[in-house]
Length: 465
Image (tube, one colour):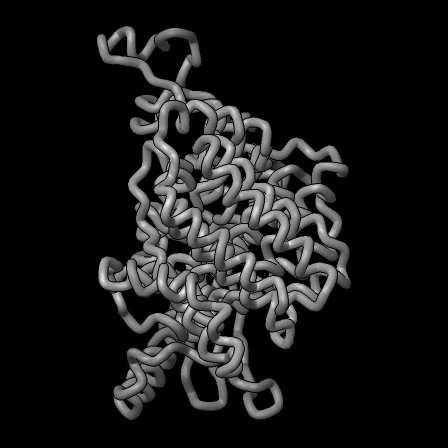
């Protein structure tokens, strides 16, 4: 106990009373600023006076009391315990945090013995012992090595918010069904592993929110274009930066490739995204091959061989497409030949015509020939590819609308890629692209687009807008 005769105590009380009076006077005159955040004053306009002295705490241990007041008369009293001299400070015993514990121990936040098939804690309580999925655990480990910064530190908005309710809604919509349906062999990686990696890669999170906004607008009619484009721009900028940055872990490469595929799929949900769709799909393939050559331990690779083996099983005993639809496609493609004045157009025409010929053989042949169309576009050299998607290439534009119409007609076969999952993406964007090409064609060339437009008109009323 400190007696009233202690001079240090009397000095402390004198300064404390002075500070309390100044503080209460200041608060009384500025009560409207109580809830405002404190803003540090500039050193050039604010002078600070500091007094420091030592007293004994009620427990007899030395404390350093510092009182400070600024030019406005506001003051604060800070007590700091002086370190004890001549003694060793105890250091906390280090430990290694394991991520391999069972889910029950993780939930209870206790140490797990990690024994299989059941840990000691679960055995003692006679409850089922379940361990995390190895793939999810692997992705979590790789994402942890990528960046220690959690998603809470990311600024995903134009305003100074961190993770808004609208972002959470879009993220939830992505997990429900807005994620891509490829790789066909295991598209669950979009909901089990990619979100974990996105928590440490801002551009990937922007890509997730961007495609979710475009997809939600597509299926509900809500006006989310501004939100979708905002996230899309940031995803593209971040992906470009990531491409130029040396990748240290497989998680870095997974984040980059996943972001690029999301940007490509988002292009297919945008009304005027036709040209961007072909460009980004081709870019994804080039990037995938480049990342494969880096030999990083990635979990996100699209393997055509695995997809083909899965699709063969899904297409067995599936009936062929109606003959009248196939004949209509053949006749329309043949009629387009006079319009094909560029070499790449003739090559594109041939791969499309091969799809119509395969329709008379089997559904398996139709699917593989249709996938060959994408491989043709991806495998083009830079100049022929630019010629194909050139808006001035009227023959190429008409062939693209035939490609979209064939995809609509072949949906009973191609749609088997969604097997085991409800197809949540309508073909509205295909119709918009077909109609946009029809509108840009000169009047004397519109006849070449007759069959694709007829296909679009036939399904338009059945599409949920």
